[in-house]
Image (cartoon, rainbow, N blue to C red; front, side, top):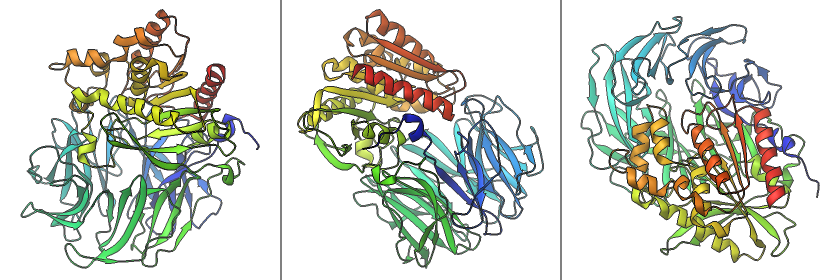
Length: 601
């Protein structure tokens, strides 16, 4: 079998984040051909795309005006997450900075119906809180009107059909939000989601008449369902049950009533398309003929006759598809390169479930190289971040590289992961934190029983919260591991919470515990305080500008592990934040990872 170097795999391209232009003929999207995502556009399927932006920094979103030949995109500097907005004309010749306040974060809230204004939230006034702003499309700099002064983590979910109101989302934690409706003229904020306990409200859309919101929520349910929130009664009616799985997304075209919702079934997307025939009834259209995997990010054309979305799968790199709404006929519009690697060499995972310490079944994806030999195959246990994330069957060039080099790949969705109901997500909260690490131990023991695995060559790898899981697994169960790779991970919950961005602290304390009331517990579960147990060689990768998990987490774990005479290697990127966006840095980081594992595993 032909083997390819890491640079080749990291040059597999991804096209995503589609947006239809106001004429419905052109489609913009983000594509990382130049090394970081930039704005490109197409006017027909698989044509040669036109590049519209040419920056060294990654672009996070691009949204066409509903009326004019222009779009707004967002970009930060060096991964610092302090996003600024820019207006780009349709031919890509003129870029106008709109916000130009580099010390503030800006969170996109959408265009109004005629494209004369856009809305956003920002922490310009105070670093830890977000206010609501409206800005004219031709205004620049700080020329935006604050229409509501906030006192927490606020974001927006779009303008009402008549442009007189905005939905304001107030996040208390990843699993508890409140919704408000802001009257723009009066500045009055109406609270529309009174509830007890933790309830999620997401993927929010205005109903066609502006008298209701269509959204996904788990109010009164363990799983997310599609509901209609009546803005007069504040009652939520069920439109589509989640059942055993989450309805994790909804897109609604206000004018036509055409509606798309997705169900997350053990990680795989099941898409349903239809049209509202009543407040809670839908006339169903045929299911789109899309590749199996993960799909989302819907953008309707101006008349909702078609919609674009991003599709990815374990053996399919990420591309944009356009679907005929009524027939379900789908056509791939982008042709993101696989860098000359034959797609048939990519490995599809097996969905498995292993039993943990308390008898609970934990889902995981397990991939094995085609030529794996009995009892001789090393395994990478790749642990997702969040912790409220979920490993799904999307394309991963890193995974496919290691499979090509003879490693098996194990991706567990330990307790605390999303996608399996509300109860499952709370099984690792605060004092139950280490139960999720025990799930990793159980997963490794399951691997020992698989005939193909070499039990002496198992690697822990993960990023962000997954980096904490790596460090915790290495210090709690040191005899299980041949090596560990910590990418932008948490080493000390106390210093992490003290130094993370002010705007994030309360949200993270809701998950991990409070510095004021849980400090002793946070210290007890921090890997830095159990470093005397570590035995396996450790590689630590981090970005110097990381606003979420500050680089000090990497520095302290490296220092303490070296003091224990553990082989440690470190790589810090001065122009990156929470993860690695630039191609040259990804190549260096993951080539270093491969060399490290070749050396020790």
